[in-house]
Image (tube, rainbow, N blue to C red; front, side, top):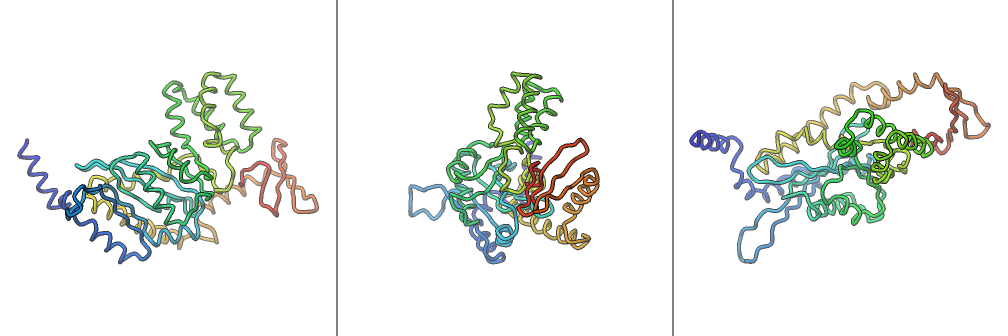
Length: 344
């Protein structure tokens, strides 16, 4: 068996390259990446060496933000990004940290990625500081982050972006809840509270939950609703996203690259990003009308639902809209807001 493993290791080195030697080529790879992708940021960090005359350093982490993706994100996309990390699977332990946004079709838009030694405060801070520089953000920026509350991430976000909003993935909250309350009813209750768009509706549902299970309700209240309930979102991110699904989708797409050598892993990610852009361009060429395919589907569904509503004009810029159950809301056309807060 030992001989078989040695033979397999030798064959793997022939196919994928030597894991150790790839670290020696990282600087050349970074220069080539910047030469072929204008405005690309590549930063390599190494461990401090007690011997300044030594020609080698030990690798610590690398950060990559491709120039075209950076340019498009700054020009077109919403101020909402997901943060996540995934394990490397090769002989050298590490983590792939990623920043993923949403494009105009509600699809994933990977923005930056990094390979670090572990998931901790220092590495998240280094990663987000580089992102801050690339997006030209200040400490008073109004971005919205969504995450699974990874180790060290909450502290880092609070330090670097004190004015940002930080959403917690509702699926992660449910995973913690079902350790003690695993029945399906609790999941359904949680999703109803998170999906409510107004504070009175949220408080009414929480009162019902308290009557259903007071202990579970008290446990849920320990997490401030501003982090997980739509009714408490500010609306400035222009998104009702409750889960960090964009990060999980991206991690799934690059899973086969996480067991490769460091350069092969970085190349696997870059090539996937190229293919994603090409596939999206092909989909947009087939789209009918001025909207993206997802936006068109959403609008068509809204048109069908709109037949159940009656709108009455007030003579200025507002409408009273009455639903099938006599629910009434005020739509302000000029400011593009509604008292139901669904649009925001």
